[in-house]
Image: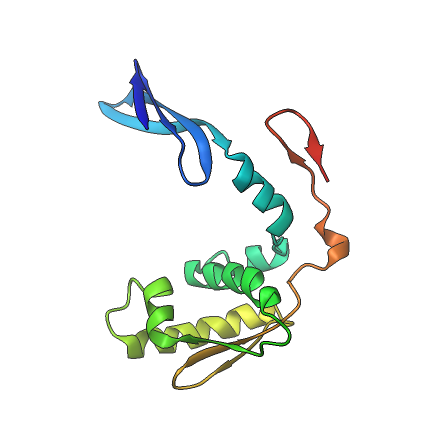
Length: 165
């Protein structure tokens, strides 16, 4: 639901949020909309608390020059440790990878080359990540997350002012 007030707009009941508020300012005759507040839905916030996988700050900094590398690192960090141990590796076919990560590549062949080279960069900062590549796609193997349990302590401030640890 979108409601408008003078100088602002509010969206209510989004998929991951209950509400966010935008306001508009005029600078050099160009209207700019910037988020003022975002209130996450309780369900989404709880999923962040229970399912979040922290990323290694050094890895993020090291990959910050390459958007695809950042995307692959974040994807692998959250995906690899959730593979069921008894289920074995999971195949992600090339067309699906291309659809998810290769919007800028018309040819699957070129995307595969870039994807493989980028995975090598990710491997350098996430050495415990395990995967295999073949003609069908990438086989993901269960791996430890990039940040061990000891380093996962973070404090998140809830909208009610309580802190979660």
